[in-house]
Image (cartoon, rainbow, N blue to C red; front, side, top):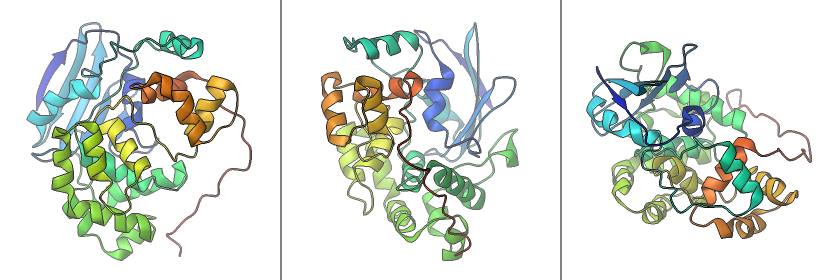
Amino acid sequence: MRSTTWQPDRLLDVARTLGPLRRGPGDPSFRRDPDGVWWRTTTTPDGPATVAIRVDREGVHHAAWGPGTDWVMETVPRWLGAEDDRSDFRPTDPIVARLDHRFPGLRLARTNRIWDTLIAAIIEQKVTSVEAHQAWRSLLLTAGDPAPGPVGERMRVPPTPEALLALTDWQWHRCGMDGQRRRTLRAAATVAQRLEAGVQMSAPDASKRLQVVPGVGIWTAAETMQRAFGDPDAVSVGDYHVPSLVGWALIGEHIDDERMLELLEPFRPHRQRVVRLIECGAPRPPRRGPRAPIRSYRSI
């Protein structure tokens, strides 16, 4: 175990900064204790790691356990937005400016780890959030190792590419994974090392590399870039909810992807930052239809 304290150079909202890294309330790789300590597991180039983060007036205290301790100790400040450069973000739109003023501690996290975020994004393709979160939880409980350190069996590390490739069809089925997402995950796992090397590339180049994988399109790549790179401009085109959120916040209308991109264009290269501000504090649009049904592949 190693521990240290990091001093942020500006206000930090830990909950909203780390929030996009959590995959639902039952995520085995992410938790927050009642005493305010944040826990997160991750794969690293050196093996699994568990991190505990606690914030007080003296700074951000973080400790790590597992073979990936050294790597993750250097990376935690990036999780908390240490590399998030918003120096040229000066929104003139009154709605966005108010949101920015309301959430001064919001930063964009960078995990510096493509694999963990990519597999979660693939799992979330074309299903409801509830379905995706259930599948993520089942997959980690089936193929992920127990977390290093004091949390042990209470948390799981995201499965490695090797662990995914070793799963049987029945295990995939029990995790609630349909054939298309299963094939995409396997395809990604076979080239995982090459994909992970993308962290040394620019975000646009890394995104293009991801989209070479069969089944990985612009939405999946954007979701990965947002988290792995902290990319402030990676918009999730093709998302079921985001266009309506943006349209309702900015012009009071339900809109499509094309119109959303038109509205966000003046904010380039901070379009995703604007989306994140809207997610944090703008009014939600009214529902236009019934909730999508929750499907279960386990009983099929």
